[in-house]
Figure 1 (cartoon, rainbow, N blue to C red):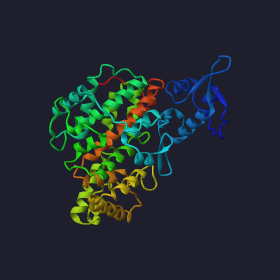
Figure 2: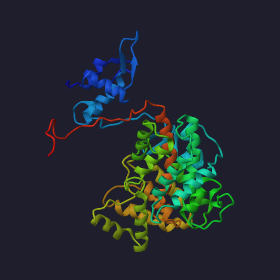
Figure 3: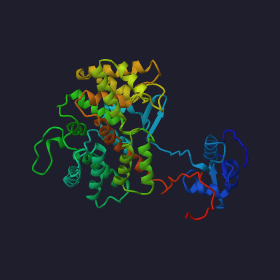
Figure 4: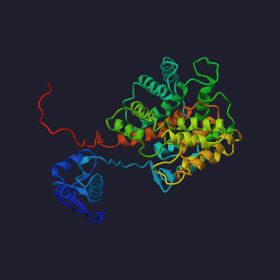
Length: 426
């Protein structure tokens, strides 16, 4: 294998398969495997004899291989996916090139979702679902045990909604968009309202009308919302709609690569988001805030977390060196809500106290926790908000993946077990 470190590649330069193999330190057959798995793209050479590869792509793959351990690029440890959806740079993030915090501040969650899906704005759009989808999802959720968590309910609702849609295997853009506009309100409607509502003649209640944020609020809090609180929840949904290739989004793209329908792709995302290090993180921050309010100070609460060897929830983010821009946007809105003032002060106390030991900034989980704790919601409410919001981004990524080569999301395994052949076990 060559120890070769190329300089900057000519943007127009194409490489033959043999040249790419030498640059990567692999056999030509391995280069063909990279192309089949989507790690490299190829183009027929002029005259139709053989294929050529983009020199920049080959160079990038070679560099990733060296980062993974100095060997060949074949270990598959660094998966890069081209996307037009979300760009994160210097403590800011953008949806299709537009500042995401400004977009969520000026537009409803439904409008942000449409922008992610199509790159077009649909002012005033409101998502609604047919009675058949809502009733099937509701019946399935009502059959669950009482202790079921919010993600349990959402996953069951997604499966039930899929069963009512005989055209769910149509993966054309228009069909998937139609599914998305039905699935999101169905997920919300399937959650039991916190306040008793009188059933309408055809099964819909007053909690199923109007903008999605208002319908979701009725599922999370028994308190009637003020306009500023609804605006806060709506903005939170928009801010959380997507965040590049988070773990749940990668799962969605893998499912879509296998041509799973949109309901199944969303179910894959919901399965991952239930992890304590992903969508459920705001619940820990919520409980931390409650403890700080009970104690009157963050110091003893943070001390107990550190003594137990636990990471303080709601602080730090691997993609932002400063404050999470989503948290910054939500904190600004929380300052306008008088009821949130004590909880907001507790959050700032947590950040200031922890900063004595580590320079960590607030992330969106802490801001979500202030929202839920100050609105009479349960600790799991942040997880629900996160999942409903991120469904828009999952659909956007599924749409992108349906336009790619099927089954390309196939990294190589790096086998480290005993060398074969071995005798059969007794």
